[in-house]
Length: 330
Ligand code: KG4
Ligand code: ZN
Image 1 (cartoon, rainbow, N blue to C red):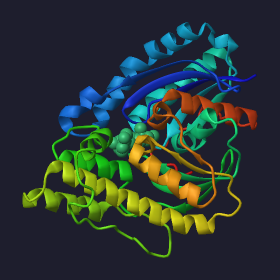
Image 2 (spheres, helix red, strand yellow):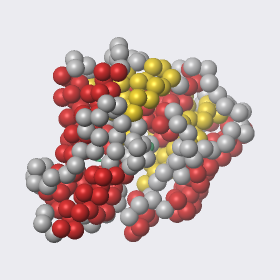
Image 3 (cartoon, rainbow, N blue to C red):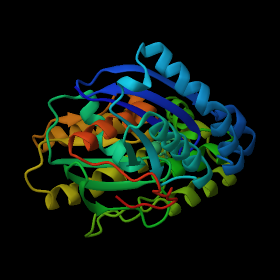
């Protein structure tokens, strides 16, 4: 059995977890910085880095204490090494290096996107490679074929905003606060998804790429017109997003052969309307649909520890002089 300590600090969540190769999360802690960033309507990198620096050490200690294991029992220490806000990534990676050095255990530098991409396998033992993955978070919107650990074929990305970003901006326009995704989803429950005519950028185009900037601008114009209820704008925005995802995925599914399942991961995968639409799409294509439980969708330490388990078992580890990377495509 492999036991990995995972550390995540690439955005506004400071997180640590201990996960085994038998898919047991022995302990985990997450400190959210939501309140610190809320007055600014988005994540402020300086505030984030300082908060990670303050919270991470006690959080790792608490995770070890709760699990009843010590650093000596751990096989390796995994940390997000990018992509993300560089100050925060450095805090997590430097801490992991220090722990690796002090304990003599290997360091595993995890790509945050790989953390999201493999997280469904932590929750679902039966999920086999290759699978089709929609990765939708605050910073990314991609369709990938996951062929194995470290083996990804990217079929689509966004040419402008990520979908989570579009949710966050819509929330800001509607005055719902930060983080926006869950608030837009909640307000949309009271609205009519057909009330506001909004664009579906790139719908019907030949390659499965995404674009959400035009949708966000249309939300702003609809709001400024004063003609619509905020709930109707939220519901119409969410429906436009769903329509784009499904249309783009249909193109991508044509380009992905022999996949075992359709999988969604990343913060936006916590959205139940999106999950339901994807489940229906998978059903139509005769594919099983997998989505990690909500708590594993948004940033967390367990997904980094799990990517560490998968990488460790595949024979990967990293030198202690590895650098944090603000940009790091899968
Ligand atoms: O994966 P994540 O925690 O961080 C990044 O790596 O970006 O994703 C955060 C994003 C935010 O944009 C947030 O608004 C969005 O995920 N999100 C949601 C929901 N919950 C979180 N978007 C739509 N509906 C949700 N329920
Ligand atoms: Zn993330």
